[in-house]
Image 1 (cartoon, rainbow, N blue to C red):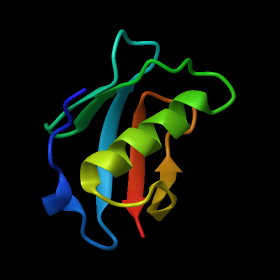
Image 2: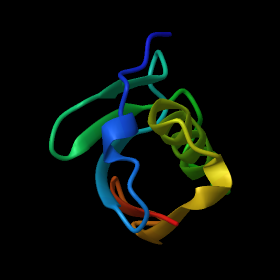
Image 3: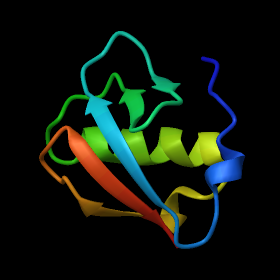
Image 4: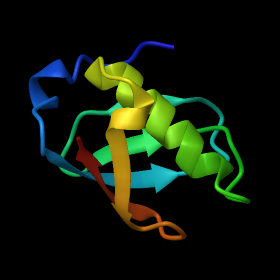
Length: 83
């Protein structure tokens, strides 16, 4: 899995809009506006949100605990904030 380098967006307080696709064939990120993220996890019990947080954090080069989901817990369109 090749992820884009999003470290330039890793500024404290940055808000990242994400369009998520759960139950995809692969885990991937497309650097666009909003960010497009595909994860293989199912959208149940927060599994997809956790997978999205982990893949986004890896691409940003930060710890997953630094990302907070502000909006979109059950929606495809999400808003994360970097603490």
